[in-house]
Image: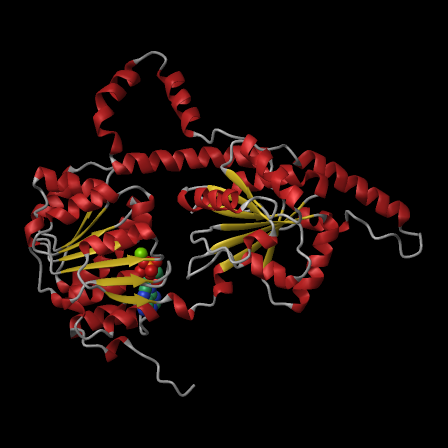
Length: 484
Ligand code: ADP
Ligand code: MG
């Protein structure tokens, strides 16, 4: 290629910093790093940078900030991250980068004791990374002085607001009186983030890095195979497994749309139908409900979904194969928009699965085939989710007001029962999932036996179960979305 490859050494970074990057084995800055480093007055502007996960955002903001600092001392940079894990990850990255420049990192996250964090700050940490709750804690105790902080980075701004940190963020932003620059890094820029930008950033420069990523690469395609008479049960299991934040379920007919939406709603899902027989007002209402809710399922026909522009759709679920591949691609394109990643799930009968295999041969869709998750899988996943939920709660230090009550509960003889009861409240209140596995396997066996018996009949009738048996035995179990 004739285009010259960009290198870190092309940028105006101190030689010590260059050495540190080289020692780590990094040569080429990622696109988001190039975009930020390429701004000539980057330190004198607020920034809104949109780039997807794993694109190297940490170095993108750390490099110019660290390059500008000299030695250790008081906190100069504060990076806020939505979760303990992300904060720790970012801190780790800033650590190897900053330490050789004589800068220490303090990591202020919840769920761990505050003492060591206070000593870290006392010893002098110019780089501070933390979750909002714990950072406020330090600000209130006076162990973190906001006055020396010049740079504020809101990392994963969208997730921070998803997790309900808006009040905390505002409380922190209000205390930062000597801020020279506020940089927001986010994979997406939903309305909630826009509000924050309008309120707290001054004429931010915007860098959007998602344009060079094709939409299709951001969608992963999964197929679950099960007989069409068990399609509804399979849908429930898949919904419980995937736990979409927002999903559009595509059905073939208006009747099916209404039926599926009704059954899902009865099973405890926030499902709304949308189809051509509904009046415009009803349709608008359904759309509004879907747009404004943080979780929701829109059950739609192709026609009703045409031209629908809803952001934040995490899942498209296709019940059955549409009439052609164009429709398939069009449906799946409702997710994975604006550089977000999305998941397209298709539930197919064995016959449809065979057709699908024909279709994808002529297109280069990368599709993963999964067995439908069974009730047991769902129960295990729910336990895992609850544990993660508890970790999150602990990290957010949300329950500070309830500590005394919690102590009293722990002292009770029935503490175990109380805790179990609380967990049951935290768990999903709707459908439990269907036990399908045994049934599907029995059918598969029957089909195999039938096939053996029929094998001498000329060519044999097309076997409805053949593809399902392949689909069902496909590689491993699906990976839960929540279990990162
Ligand atoms: P993001 O915050 O955008 O999700 P990170 O900043 O965590 O992404 O970076 C993802 C991974 O890529 C990290 O392990 C990081 O060390 C690595 N990385 C970052 N920049 C580069 C680079 N220029 N070359 C090679 N690896 C990099
Ligand atoms: Mg990051």
